[in-house]
Image (cartoon, rainbow over all chains, first blue to last red; front, side, top):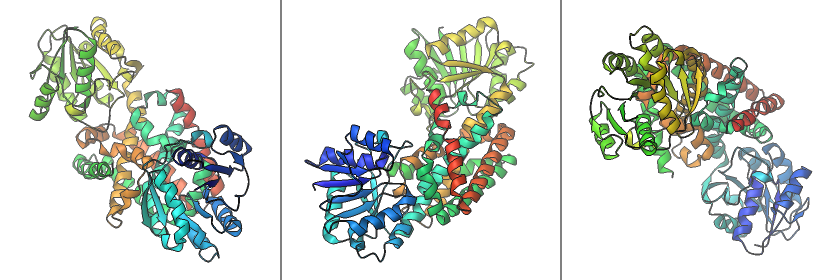
Length: 282
Length: 282
């Protein structure tokens, strides 16, 4: 592994570079970002050594780390023009649309559909962290459609970054992520909105916010440029998750309205089982 | 300050003791918990030096740290029997009902209505931390109804623990807390429930959960015994907050259903303002 090219030099793209450069000797990372300020920051932070719009033909890996709505065109354009020994993978939060889009592309075997379960509520090159990906889960979809030899280049990087690989089909990925990631972001954004609306009447309402509020509202700081296309691309699964969430809230609301302490207690005690499930994962 | 008595030796009661003993020399802390295991644990962890059901008559401070539904009877019984130089305060998450309940009690001046904005998703004496209260906000209600001299005893403790005092009336407290604490707990419990329900069909769904999900669902681990009475006691304010939340979710859902990217982007960008507000508080 000698050369990596990253398009989209934000939180994820930047973290891939910083992590890889720490672990792989003599690695050259070039890249591109549509925002000139991000280009400058990426150079200053040594995320990349050079800005170039397209990868050299002898590049080992191209990483696409731009918002979901730009990935389709970018992936096709990249597959159209990359060298024969280059593998490209994207890190987008939805996988069905992209895999369908390139299903019949002549260079389909040079693409790997990936999604690292890693991030923070911040964005841009300055938010990148060299250990962001360390021991995180990396979901790989349609592995069988990627060239056997080129796959090894991705594995070399993923091993270096200590990523834990999980394999599933793209539809399953999108269905699961709607529940364990996309819904969390919506619940957090709407919680922030609800309290901001209340602030119009109650100026000091945030003075009383503790760590519980901070934790549940953290994702409301997330980037709209990243999240808008995820919400529309994974619409069907997200509406399914959101309808379940709203139904649960409405049913819980009725129990509160009726002061049904027994039902409230039992429901919360049942949900407490999530403790064991989450703790198992750590 | 020589003697503190704590009723309810859980997360908050235990943390008040551990913090106070660290900062105030020659302090004796006694206490009581209805659960014999909690009594044992509190002795082992040196949260208290002795179990006793009622405070000595020369106790400086009595802290009531039991679930909200038990605080009313306990407060009246304590005010009925405490020595003339004892101040009692509770640390419950709702303040209107208690302050109304004791409004005409002959010993009303010996009571301070308080609520520390501190906690974790865990409960019981083993969850107590000596620095849980350090630099946290302590809300005080109806300060003018508490005896001027006895108040000093509470201040001595609050200063020792580095608590930051905020003053407001009980109705305002309950209205605000519904939005910045109680709603967060409900949104988190319901998020946990929605994903647990999905797990019935998709066994491995939690494998894909990242730090964003962990953050938003953390409060779903909270104690049902603590939260059931809060939900029913602050019902009116909580229904108000919850209705606003459900309305926001439903309206956001429609924008997703219509793939209205511009409206979604603008709404999330507006909510992003919460960054500045939250960061100001730190």
